[in-house]
Image 1 (spheres, helix red, strand yellow):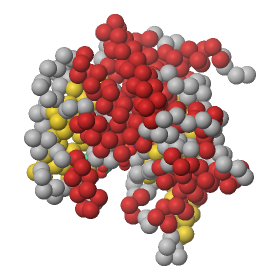
Image 2 (cartoon, helix red, strand yellow; image 1 turned 90 degrees about the vertical axis):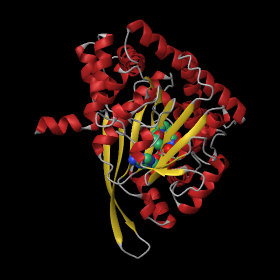
Image 3 (tube, rainbow, N blue to C red; image 1 turned 180 degrees about the vertical axis):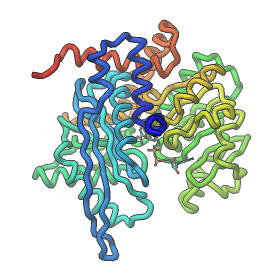
Image 4 (cartoon, protein in one colour; image 1 turned 135 degrees about the vertical axis):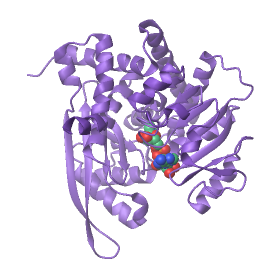
Length: 419
Ligand code: NAD
């Protein structure tokens, strides 16, 4: 029984993927022991007074996996059922993500076990400010820089930045990224994760010589990353034929009118019922005969149970850990090309890095400069991973991990073990 629980653990899956890369690299036993564990984890239980005068106690987390290469970096998510195991897995993923694209950061993740839609804006602000205070002992420009993730946004980051600043007595803009531009945010940051997904999808299509006249796309999850990806891929000439959210999916083989769909979503609170498309089942979206599938919702969406339904030739894994290791193997065996999560959604953290650099220098760039630098870094990383995949005869995910783990191992070796 204990073994079964372990095999379902998100962190155990992250460790399995690390182990696969460590085997390819031939990492020493000592380095494995160090890199496969979490450096530090903070769990907080804190009260918030609700609008009705009652008190509710929330549980939140902030975890640092490894900080050998620089300050800890990673998102904060508000998600019902969030637990320490998931946060550990996502923190480890952040270490590899920052490393594979050569950012001078370590990996962190955090969040609160809460459905943010169930709180009023007032309650959300109070919860965010109290949570920020609880984890403030870890946060700061040189130590740990949070960013938005599932269920959080630029407003959340503004509240956190303000809270950290109030405690410091001066504005500490570089303490979080993904802020509104008015308070030290970067041009281009809000859609950078989707822009990175777009650049990589286009690069992969080029590499695969996919000659479809107009490649078609299905996007699972129409949130910050999914909606930006859908729009940018459409602008690049691809045809987005289906998108979904947690409540349902819509499909139009001729292509979706994304502007009208966005208006519909804002009014109706979801994509379902959109007049210019047909409602389909969420699971059916994954099996559509499209060129590209972009899972941009949450983890474990494509598993052993449904991988055989996938008909896309390319998967750009925008959501963290959207594919299970078993799905990886099944799809790889069928020749489906994967751009793995740590590379696929790294556009978000790359632009966060740009935002942090701009805040520290108090010198801001135009959006074109942000996008050009993002394109350069992410395209270089794509070809690094591709060459490693070809040269070492490993799949794209293992190749991305090999590069990332090797860099962190090098940093650990050269720094040595304290004291
Ligand atoms: P978000 O909260 O803005 O959007 C998530 C979307 O997924 C929503 O539309 C939600 O309804 C939908 N969804 C949830 N469960 C679903 C399901 N089972 N089927 C279909 N749709 C479902 O979150 P986001 O910021 O867009 O993040 C999406 C993913 O991208 C997450 O894995 C996150 O960790 C990752 N990511 C985000 C960023 C960023 O900058 N926001 C950066 C890197 C990675």
